[in-house]
Length: 158
Image (spheres, rainbow, N blue to C red):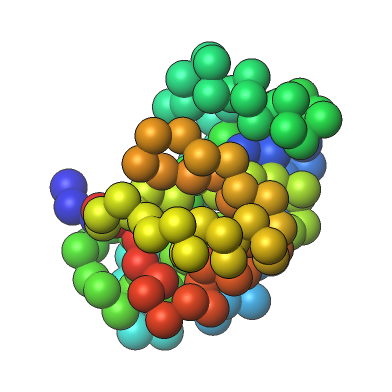
């Protein structure tokens, strides 16, 4: 199955985070599939979903420790936000959703870049919020993610 996903690490439990995710999906104009409640569709008919996993589900333990040290809190949940088609038009919705969930849950968004980011881009993100660099990707807090989302080169990877 194709598509794109973003991960938001948050210090809150899955039970506390799920209502936030649902509200933000609805605020983004999505509707829940009445037959399969885990599936959501945008007004354009694009399929989205989310998962709530342990924080180390897809995050390396060493990276998780770095994020926790910088955040000053233990991460308790990884929110996987998914669009199940390779549709460029749907990716900004995914980015905005990740930013809003991070904002409301004191979370950090894992962002991978198409190419190693320029120093001025990373400086811009760090000036907007907090940015943890790991190899060729970053973890951004909500203000830094908002700056990335507003940047003309904004993208999310498949």
